[in-house]
Length: 258
Image: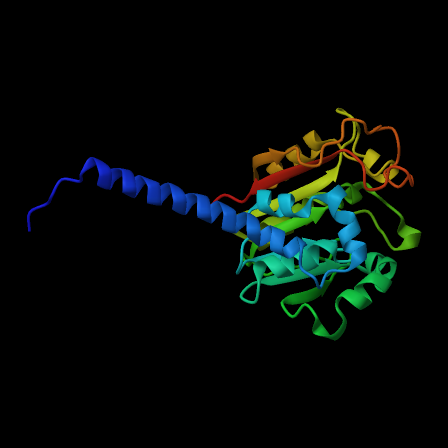
């Protein structure tokens, strides 16, 4: 069979279809996160947090997709767990990790969120500090949202012993599949702040996070400014009532090499 040359107009049509297809894929991808955020099953309390957390933009940035297995580390009340559940869908899985301290604090919220198996693709994982064990190469993505700084928080009497950060990151690296994403969202501390800031103002210098996570074998791929707030005062604790939910936050996307 002889090959026929592609005409100029046929080439234009082909390029147009390709461009339109790419545009449609981008729209569908955005719609996936919008649909999760707009899901009518979400509570009003969660919806009120959305403006300050921009979860659709964060999940889009991290590349969470249907069918993924995702670990929500120190998932707390499950705000992100529920959104992840909607995005990964019935063929995906969300592992909602907690420990006794977080579970007690968030019990009123989680008892409603997980009642009657309303999020059937979510499984619970209880593991105390320094006792996390993951199945090797099992996770497509791991999220640490506003919890990395807690590596440097200590309250032994309150059930929060010091976390061995190197051990934790090594376990996350072991549990992540090659090519998996590690997403970290946390409150900015001033550049050069010591690690102990994580236990006092509950903030952390992103440069420390990057250095520690890369030392564990992950590679920093991108940073997002979607949660920046230049008006934030880094000297203040993140729990002050007029500041809560309005801090300057960094969003880091790491990847385990393939």
